[in-house]
Length: 87
Ligand code: SF4
Image (cartoon, rainbow, N blue to C red; front, top):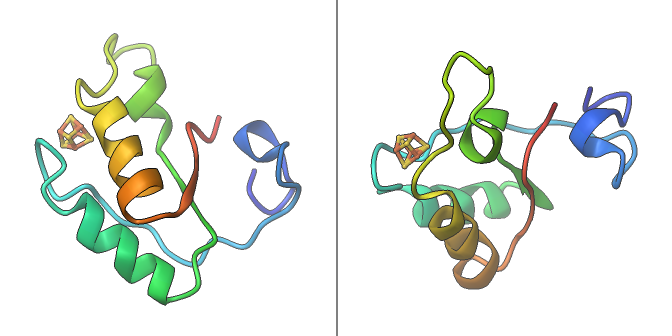
């Protein structure tokens, strides 16, 4: 999807994925530190996995309860743009 600019990447067009990371566990303990490290390594945007905002796959039935806070940390504190989901 990322390489083809599909799904959540339609707004950016084709992109290169330079890394994959986790939040570090509830309630997003490492989000800021990891976002800053990814920024240092050249990340221009942080793309949230689809489970975080959409609660997908549908078998999960719920999104991350801290999704809004994670986004705020990345965008406002780490100063990196985000995309809410991949597919
Ligand atoms: S529920 Fe949210 S804060 Fe908790 S581990 Fe999953 S993504 Fe991180």
